[in-house]
Length: 309
Image (cartoon, rainbow, N blue to C red; front, side):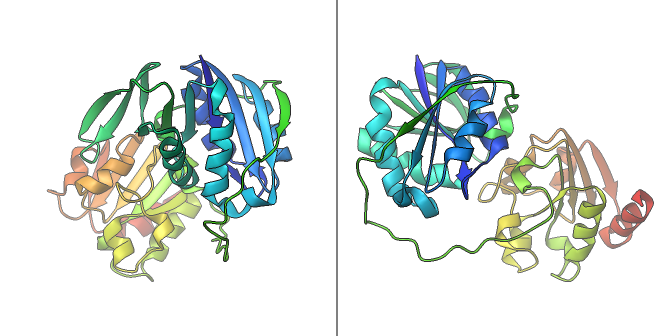
C-alpha cells in the first residue's frame, strides 16, 4: 500500500519533529511519499528526503500555497491522490484545516487524532477527553487520517529519498491572506519540548506567571498553561495545554497550581514523568502524577528554581 504524507512546512522550512513522527505512523501503512507544499518548499523537501523510511518526496512550490491557506493545498492533494490508499498528516493546526477539506473533496470520512494503527483499515483514537479509546474501521477506498504526534516517536535521519517536483493545477480564491502574527520565543516549541512547565488558575495573575517562566527557563523547557489560566488572562492562548489546546507528551511535565480537570489531563497525561505542585491534597492532578508536592506554589516553585541554579 502507498501512503501520501502531508509534511508540516512553516516559512519554507520543514517542521522536522511533527513530520518525522508522522513518518513513523505512516510507515505502519506502507511506502511513504512525503508532500512538501508551500510558496517555498525546496529546502523542506531536501530535509524530508533525509528522514528514515521516506520512499519519495514531492515538492510543490506556488505562491497560492503560501500563507498556510488550505483550499489550494487540499486541491493539490486530491489531484495527487490517485496512487495512494492512505492520505495522512500529523495532527497539527495546519493539517486539521487541510485534511477535512481533502476528505470532503474525496467524499470519504476523516479519522482525526489517531493514536495507533491496528491495520490498513483500522485505527485507534481517543474520545471523551481521552477517557476511552475508540477503534475506528473505515471501508472507504481512500483513508484520510491525522495522527496525534505525541503518541509516536520521531523517525531518525539517514534516508536518501528521491525528490520530485509537482505543479499546482488548481488554485482557489475562496480565502485570502491578510496577515500573520507570529509569537517569537527562544524557548522550545511546546508540542515538541522534552520538558514542559505549566501553570494553572492557582498562579493567580499574569505577573505571577513569571515564576512558571523562570522555572521553565532553568530547565530549558517550554511554558504551558491550563485553560483556566488562559481564560483568566494569565497566559497567551498558544500556551494552552488540554482538550481544546495542545497535546503534549514530554519527558517531564511540571504542573503548578493546576487542579487537573479532565480536559487538561487529556492534553498531558501521556507525559513520561508528571510532577504536580498544588496546595489542595485532593486535587485530581495527583491521581496521574508520578511525584506530588502538597505545597503553596509561591513557596515551592521559587525554591525549586533557586536549587536548580
